[in-house]
Length: 303
Image 1 (cartoon, rainbow, N blue to C red):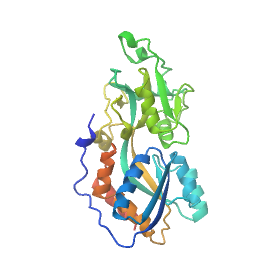
Image 2 (cartoon, rainbow, N blue to C red; image 1 turned 180 degrees about the vertical axis):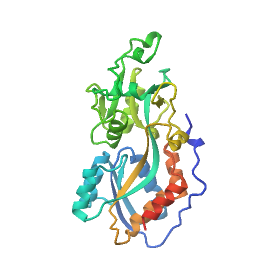
Image 3 (spheres, rainbow, N blue to C red; image 1 turned 90 degrees about the horizontal axis):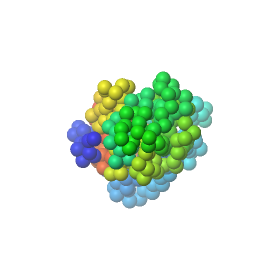
Image 4 (cartoon, helix red, strand yellow; image 1 turned 180 degrees about the horizontal axis):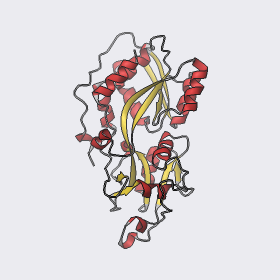
């Protein structure tokens, strides 16, 4: 596992340059996965602009699109891309689609208890643990012995933890790990990302999924892959190369009319997030920073 202090931001990222006349209120409603990151970005931004007030609410990615449509927030953080129906609802109101801004990279990790010796699982095994539909061709897995564990682990029951349906992480895992299959009713739904990790850390037989930024010393983030001979740990390198199968971008959506400029406060906040300083915050929070070429592409889309 690559430790956060070993992950370095791209040296080519630009430093943030302060501008004058940035004041006002900024509201962010959306992803729980991004809650800590948004808070840290807000603190860094407010240190530069003391006259800015930023409110952050993180109850799940599905709360972001309605908040943008109703104009109760300018920032809509999401741990998954917007669904077609969400984009359509926004476009029906404004006549154009919201602007999607990639802000960080996440490994959606599968966590086990720190004392569990298992090193990795195939996606078929993950599907067989978390789903009831087995779209990857496996069959129900209930005990650790069924994934090759020995000794006392053979008959130890697997205890699965997951998120609730308002969560983008729930949706991403359902689409990508379970191939759009249904969750098993045995999965213990948790209200937040940290609650999943805490659940696994306090349960020797536990297994759960959550963003890499929520890793603690009480859990292991195991390797995953399509087959037992090619399992990849959720490291920065494996996310960039695409080898880790559950890597994803984290997003902030904003309401930007393509015919006009973005409001100054929102624009400067996004520029701060995509700067070297903003991406150092990403590393500090345990997520993975954006390569400069991706950040530049995103910055170009703001014009």
